[in-house]
Amino acid sequence: MIRNQHFARVVTLCCCLLSVAVTAWAGTRQLQDQAGRSVTVPEHPRRVIALIPSLTEIVFALGRGDLLVGATQFAKEPPAAAELPRVGSYLHLDIERIVALRPDLCLASRDGNPEHMIRRIEQLGIPVFALDPRTLPEISDSVTLLGELLDAQPQATVINRDMAAKMAAVASRVQAAGKRPGVFFQIDASPLVSAGRGTFIDGLITGAGGRNLAGERTSYPRFSWEEILALQPEVVIIASMAGGYSEEELKAQWARWPDLPAVKNGRVHVVDASLFDRPVPRLADGLVALAELLHPEAGQ
Amino acid sequence: MTGTRPMRQRPAVVTLLLAFLLTGVLLASLLTGSSGVNVADILDALLAWGDSSTPAGAIVWRIRLPRALLAAAVGATLSLGGLVFQARLRNALAEPYILGISGGAAVGAILAMFAGLAMFPGVALASFLSSLLVMALVLLLSRGRATGRSESLLLAGVMLNAFCSACIMFLLSLSQSTQVHHILFWLMGDLSLAEPGQLWLFPPLFFCFFLILIHARPMNLLLTGEESAAALGLHLRRVTWVLLGVTSLMVSLVVSQAGLVGFVGLVVPHFFRLCCGPDHRVLVPACILGGGSYLVLCDLLARSLPAGGEMPVGVITAMIGAPLFIIMLWRSRS
Image: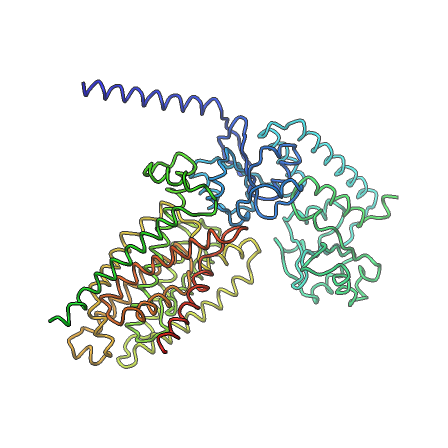
């Protein structure tokens, strides 16, 4: 009798395990993410959390904003993203809220989200797919990959075609211009911070036909005015709201050095920071805007 | 004989009361959190003992419980560390961090974060080792001075800590914005990364607690002064080494897991000294249970108060602790 019961229990357990395995197998697939890992993701994800604002924006651009059930602090583009429940900031994720939202997939940034937090989420049984968009071609790749992941291939193709067209237009403008002016891209004031080699802003400057004067250094280096006078920038691009200053205040800091080529020739420009602040498809618009500032003559 | 009876009972009474308090706050911290999962679901998950297959179950058993237990362990260790250091160094301002444990741990942790090591075991191990290194250096520097040993220990500790702070500032000024955020959270104490795997901390910590508990009476003798304690038969050197060694070890352990949770080691022992008097047979269990409860409570506030994401628990410990302590001090005077 006891033996029979035992046997029945084992059979039930096996059936349960088998059914779980079958449903799991039927509903999932393996996909290589941009961190080079093979991730088991749902065939058709239904509840997705993007763990960094740029990815939230790309998902909306793909027309799959309906899948999102959570977003991080500062994910305010497009406006609909601001309505989503928050799960902390991308650097400090609130794991408990993530679990409570019952996502079947999380989208992470390889570069942005801390690795230990990603591991913690995976330990809790939630698949995390890492993307790594930094340059424009990489953004294109991420869009393609996300299109495949979220059943939005047609929309991904549209976005990529649009980005490619903008990049081609800029490339021909740069070719027509011939020379490459030295550019100082100021992303923060007091201390003065620029974007060095390997950042997406560096890629944009090169793509738009300029020479990044901060390209000697890596990541986001600080500069002193003394160094800037030595660099003699021909064009200065200032991200709006840098350091919380107004456009006039930002320009006034440069006007103190009338002998700098950029100041002398009236080539100190304040640009809309939102065009340059995130690695998303609209970065292509940033590229176009930058190329127009660097090579105004070539467009005519 | 009747005069001594209440004295004998008091440790048991205080311990029992604080054990209830600790149980209460642990339960409360299982019931509340940032996600706003409703209490009925949480109660269901609690009743389904240990089952973490549902979201509520995962939240209770794999997120809230390890975190609450880690908070209790960290609070207990830091409070007890403060108690021991204040007794041994006979200085009201002494706490584990003042002898360089915090600075040493921070330098090691930040260097490991720079090197891109994982939080566990890389960063934790680096901070543990570097804090032990600094602590050993402090003990070595003050060796061989029979008189005024406490002062030379304190001075060496304060100086090494100052040097470590300079190193921290230097490293921070070199680092990038994303790292700075992470490092600052660590420096202010961060329990948000608690995971079930960290509960291995408990056996070694309990052993340290036990060692200190059996030294409660020698600690009482130390209150009378080093000479008279020695005259009363205390083996001063051995007791000092055991107390400082055990305390450094356990504090380094928790700091490596939770970052620099400030202020607990200072305020909790003084609080209980004002409430229950100077007897260490009462104070040791009171600091373990009370300090644990205090940090669990602070962590509960840290993760449920702010709407935009939690704040480091170290902010809350000081924000509540400092005013509370000032009120206590004021009332004890008048």
